[in-house]
Image 1 (tube, rainbow, N blue to C red):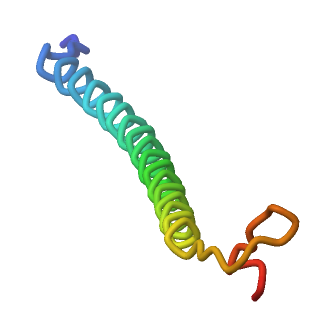
Image 2: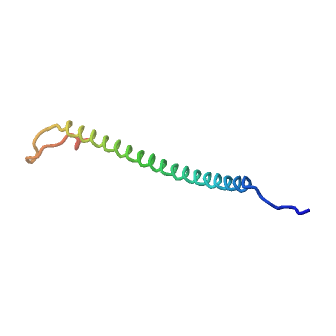
Image 3: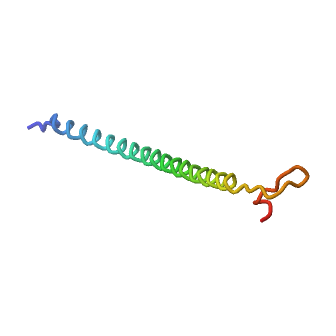
Length: 87
């Protein structure tokens, strides 16, 4: 009596499917890591841009205050004294 050593196509199909699932899982993990890094960079850049905006807004307010705070006191050598210089 001869023993046949045959493998059904289902065995190969299951192995092939398992390998493909493992590859897809690794690719998914890699994609998630790349997207996470891009999101972190985007948030960091947005935070830096917002801080720069706040700094410039403060500079504008300071300039506006300086311009509105100009008070001509009296001429000195044909120049006027700016009130902020007296602080």
